[in-house]
Amino acid sequence: MTPQILTSEAQNDFLSQEALDASRLDLLIVRAETRVLNRYRETRPDGRFQIEGVDGEPLEQEVRLEGYRETDAGDPDLQEMDEELLFAIRDTVARIVEHEAQKPDEAKHVERMDQGDRRVDFRDKDLPSSVFSGLRRFDERSAWH
Image 1 (cartoon, rainbow, N blue to C red):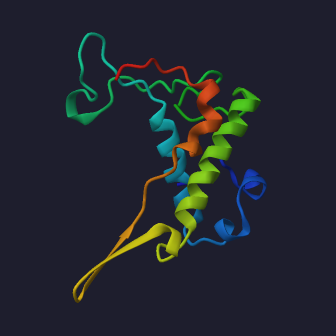
Image 2: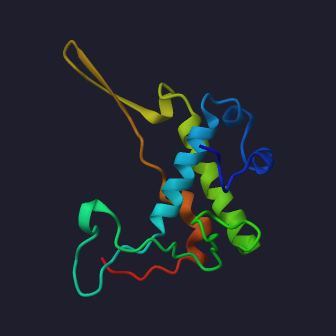
Protein backbone atom coordinates (compact mmCIF):
# COMPACT_ATOMS: atom_id res chain seq x y z
CA MET A 1 0.00 0.00 0.00
CA THR A 2 2.15 2.78 -1.38
CA PRO A 3 0.85 6.03 -2.84
CA GLN A 4 1.03 5.95 -6.63
CA ILE A 5 0.16 9.55 -7.50
CA LEU A 6 0.99 11.70 -4.48
CA THR A 7 4.34 9.94 -4.13
CA SER A 8 6.71 10.56 -1.23
CA GLU A 9 8.79 12.86 -3.47
CA ALA A 10 5.75 15.10 -4.12
CA GLN A 11 4.19 15.08 -0.65
CA ASN A 12 6.24 17.99 0.71
CA ASP A 13 5.07 20.18 -2.18
CA PHE A 14 1.37 19.53 -1.58
CA LEU A 15 0.80 18.72 2.09
CA SER A 16 1.01 20.88 5.20
CA GLN A 17 3.25 19.86 8.06
CA GLU A 18 0.16 18.85 10.04
CA ALA A 19 -0.87 16.41 7.32
CA LEU A 20 2.69 15.11 6.89
CA ASP A 21 2.76 14.33 10.61
CA ALA A 22 -0.56 12.47 10.52
CA SER A 23 -0.54 8.88 11.64
CA ARG A 24 -1.06 6.41 8.79
CA LEU A 25 -0.30 9.07 6.17
CA ASP A 26 0.23 6.50 3.40
CA LEU A 27 -3.18 4.97 4.12
CA LEU A 28 -4.86 8.40 3.98
CA ILE A 29 -3.15 9.13 0.66
CA VAL A 30 -4.01 5.76 -0.91
CA ARG A 31 -7.65 6.14 0.13
CA ALA A 32 -7.75 9.68 -1.28
CA GLU A 33 -6.19 8.55 -4.57
CA THR A 34 -8.76 5.77 -4.86
CA ARG A 35 -11.57 8.19 -4.09
CA VAL A 36 -10.44 10.62 -6.77
CA LEU A 37 -9.92 8.01 -9.48
CA ASN A 38 -13.19 6.24 -8.71
CA ARG A 39 -15.04 9.54 -9.06
CA TYR A 40 -13.90 9.78 -12.68
CA ARG A 41 -14.51 6.19 -13.74
CA GLU A 42 -17.25 5.88 -16.34
CA THR A 43 -19.78 3.41 -15.02
CA ARG A 44 -22.89 4.17 -17.06
CA PRO A 45 -24.02 1.23 -19.16
CA ASP A 46 -25.44 1.98 -22.59
CA GLY A 47 -29.23 2.12 -22.62
CA ARG A 48 -29.74 1.16 -18.97
CA PHE A 49 -29.79 3.10 -15.73
CA GLN A 50 -27.63 0.80 -13.67
CA ILE A 51 -24.37 1.76 -11.99
CA GLU A 52 -22.84 -1.62 -11.21
CA GLY A 53 -22.56 -4.84 -13.12
CA VAL A 54 -22.46 -8.41 -11.91
CA ASP A 55 -20.90 -8.86 -8.46
CA GLY A 56 -21.06 -5.12 -7.78
CA GLU A 57 -18.12 -4.32 -10.06
CA PRO A 58 -18.24 -1.17 -12.20
CA LEU A 59 -19.04 -1.95 -15.81
CA GLU A 60 -16.11 0.11 -17.14
CA GLN A 61 -12.87 0.89 -15.40
CA GLU A 62 -11.53 3.69 -17.61
CA VAL A 63 -10.67 6.91 -15.78
CA ARG A 64 -12.37 9.68 -17.74
CA LEU A 65 -9.87 12.50 -17.32
CA GLU A 66 -8.29 14.07 -20.41
CA GLY A 67 -4.58 13.25 -20.40
CA TYR A 68 -4.80 10.43 -17.83
CA ARG A 69 -2.60 7.45 -18.68
CA GLU A 70 -2.17 4.02 -17.10
CA THR A 71 0.45 1.33 -17.41
CA ASP A 72 -0.44 -2.11 -18.76
CA ALA A 73 -0.84 -3.21 -15.12
CA GLY A 74 -3.55 -0.57 -14.58
CA ASP A 75 -1.45 1.75 -12.41
CA PRO A 76 -1.20 5.50 -13.06
CA ASP A 77 1.64 6.20 -15.52
CA LEU A 78 3.19 9.36 -14.10
CA GLN A 79 5.75 9.59 -16.92
CA GLU A 80 3.15 9.60 -19.72
CA MET A 81 0.41 11.57 -17.96
CA ASP A 82 -0.26 15.20 -18.82
CA GLU A 83 1.75 17.35 -16.38
CA GLU A 84 -1.07 19.78 -15.67
CA LEU A 85 -3.46 16.90 -15.00
CA LEU A 86 -0.93 15.21 -12.71
CA PHE A 87 -0.58 18.44 -10.74
CA ALA A 88 -4.38 18.78 -10.50
CA ILE A 89 -4.81 15.16 -9.32
CA ARG A 90 -2.05 15.54 -6.74
CA ASP A 91 -3.60 18.80 -5.53
CA THR A 92 -7.02 17.17 -5.22
CA VAL A 93 -5.61 14.17 -3.35
CA ALA A 94 -3.74 16.53 -1.03
CA ARG A 95 -6.92 18.50 -0.29
CA ILE A 96 -8.71 15.29 0.69
CA VAL A 97 -5.79 14.18 2.86
CA GLU A 98 -5.70 17.60 4.56
CA HIS A 99 -9.42 17.31 5.30
CA GLU A 100 -9.13 13.77 6.65
CA ALA A 101 -5.97 14.45 8.66
CA GLN A 102 -7.70 16.98 10.88
CA LYS A 103 -8.80 15.67 14.24
CA PRO A 104 -12.50 14.75 14.38
CA ASP A 105 -12.99 16.79 17.54
CA GLU A 106 -12.16 20.11 15.93
CA ALA A 107 -15.09 22.46 16.25
CA LYS A 108 -15.45 23.23 12.55
CA HIS A 109 -16.06 19.56 11.73
CA VAL A 110 -18.25 18.59 14.67
CA GLU A 111 -21.84 19.54 15.25
CA ARG A 112 -23.37 18.87 18.65
CA MET A 113 -27.02 18.44 19.43
CA ASP A 114 -28.21 18.74 23.00
CA GLN A 115 -31.66 17.61 24.00
CA GLY A 116 -32.29 17.49 27.71
CA ASP A 117 -29.51 15.47 29.33
CA ARG A 118 -28.43 13.90 26.08
CA ARG A 119 -25.68 15.14 23.78
CA VAL A 120 -24.85 13.72 20.37
CA ASP A 121 -21.80 14.67 18.30
CA PHE A 122 -21.93 14.49 14.49
CA ARG A 123 -18.73 14.74 12.50
CA ASP A 124 -19.16 16.30 9.08
CA LYS A 125 -17.37 13.86 6.77
CA ASP A 126 -18.53 15.39 3.53
CA LEU A 127 -15.90 17.05 1.41
CA PRO A 128 -16.66 20.46 -0.01
CA SER A 129 -17.30 20.20 -3.76
CA SER A 130 -14.49 22.71 -4.33
CA VAL A 131 -11.99 19.94 -3.58
CA PHE A 132 -12.52 18.62 -7.11
CA SER A 133 -12.58 22.03 -8.84
CA GLY A 134 -9.03 21.66 -10.19
CA LEU A 135 -10.08 18.61 -12.20
CA ARG A 136 -13.17 20.13 -13.87
CA ARG A 137 -11.39 21.13 -17.06
CA PHE A 138 -10.03 17.58 -17.52
CA ASP A 139 -13.37 15.83 -16.83
CA GLU A 140 -14.49 13.76 -19.83
CA ARG A 141 -17.46 12.06 -18.21
CA SER A 142 -20.78 12.52 -19.93
CA ALA A 143 -23.65 13.82 -17.84
CA TRP A 144 -26.15 11.01 -17.41
CA HIS A 145 -28.06 11.87 -14.27
